[in-house]
Amino acid sequence: NGPGGSRSDCECTERKTITIGGVVHGVTTDKFWDIVFSAAEQGAIDMGIELKFDRFEPREDLFVQMASKIHNLCESSIDGLFVTLVDDVVVDAIRNCTKLNPGIQIMSINAGYEQSKELNLIHHVGML
Image (cartoon, rainbow, N blue to C red; front, side):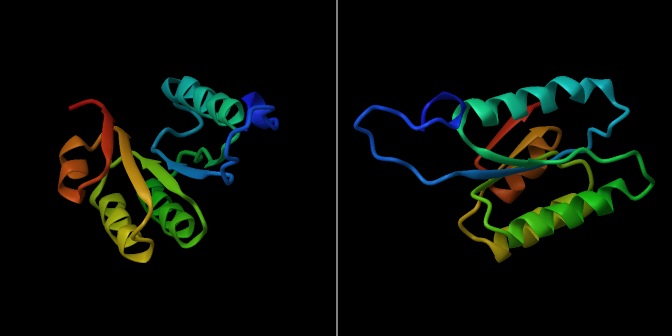
């Protein structure tokens, strides 16, 4: 696929649509995450990738919501997942995800470097 998901004119092998999920603790009221969500959405458009990346409202049970979203994404047909590993509930959800969908590529962003290493995720981008 070409820019914006348009069909390319090159004699390339067409790839299937890639679906990536994202689950982060950046709630709607946290302005820090505005650029992350914007960049992810634009990148998905530019690369012709389906992105499943919803922003949570601030709630007491945010980490439980994150774990539930991770579980639902892992049961669906996503190819990859990026997450913030901010709580043991989320780490356990990722551990379960790798059992449910062993071929899924998972990376952590922003937080959770040590947990990312422990889970043997493909990469961590963010704070150490």
